[in-house]
Amino acid sequence: MAKHMVKCFYCGEMFDASTTPFIKPNSRRYAHKTCAQTAEENKTQEEKDKQLLENYIKKLFGINCISPKIKKQIETFRKDNNYSYTGMYKTLKYFFEIKGNSIEKANGGIGIVPFVYDEAYTYWRALWEARERNERVDVEKFILPVREVHIEPPQRQPMKHIRKLFTFLNEEEAHEE
Ligand SMILES: [Zn+2]
Image (cartoon, rainbow, N blue to C red; front, side, top):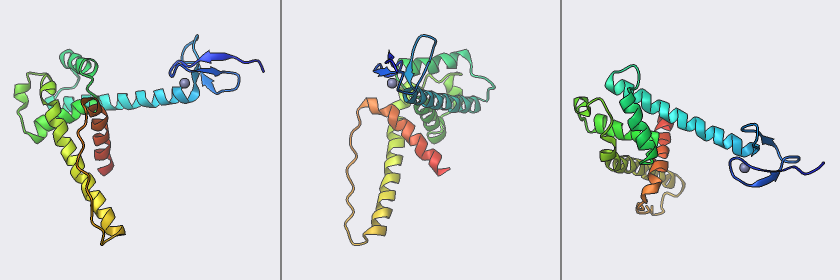
């Protein structure tokens, strides 16, 4: 069969469409089937995360639909601050539920998020680390009762990892339920 070299829409690599499974994301472009599947999964996860955040905000403010003001804030924080949807969710949960701040002060918006994001991150991270430690200790006890348990000191995470960690924390919580 004649070679049909095309460029993947997602990863940008050249591949032979006559021998490699592909899909067409639009009429002109080709993509690895695997790349397309990954993109689809990621998109679905983002959408799920966004839904979780929006549902939480609705419950928090006692509203039926997200106001244009909040919608704009979410999009701005997502794009300009690179906050994840789960990170925003966790931040609001921390500020209003854990810290018990009054919803009246929110002024019908979520403008508080950038001011509390780092603090919320520290809180959820400490919680996650404590849980990790407990799990590790339990496992070590079970396998090697006499061995000393070494706990690595927590490592400082640069800012760019926050998004990932928030997502991870959220998954951790989901596992427990
Ligand atoms: Zn690809």
